[in-house]
Image (cartoon, rainbow, N blue to C red; front, side, top):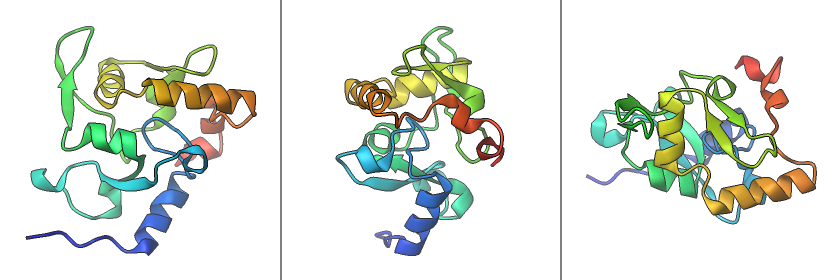
Length: 151
């Protein structure tokens, strides 16, 4: 049975909740050449639903790389770990920007694996972060502290 497309109102809610950024690589939709998409955190093939708590706003690159994956092997420990879950975990508690604000660094096995599986430091994302730094539009970590980091 084919799935029906979720309504535009759901897309709007997701985009607003994510502040117009990919919930994985933090790239702003306004600067991405590809459209953003609704990502099922727990894939439908694995029992996931269209409930807002199972949906994330993601760039095409992150969504395509995650696909139906929910876990993977940590490149440092070689242990299987779950991937980052944007509804259950806070981004700023799991990821940090490198000193030059161009590369994402993970704080744990889960984070390193998410970076590897979704290739969050792929050249196109790193280049975008470099440009965002130059024009003063980078999603720096302080944005996730205080009031904005509360949700």
